[in-house]
Image (cartoon, rainbow, N blue to C red):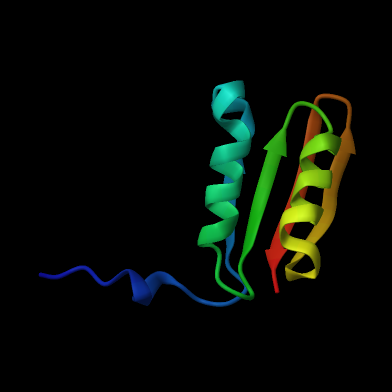
Length: 86
């Protein structure tokens, strides 16, 4: 039986990314890699313990209008952001 990843990719999918489980020195590279892997219409739901303002500035510089950033939760210790690829 062969495996075809194309069968599981569909628009409007939301992929979880919990940054709290990634070593700090690797976080930004891992986030960029995950975002680079998204297809238009797909969303990565990002969870973190702090508001990643420097990261958001880097994402806007790197992706510009190609990515939409929307906070789902913005409470101390519980930050949830949807990054959607346009």
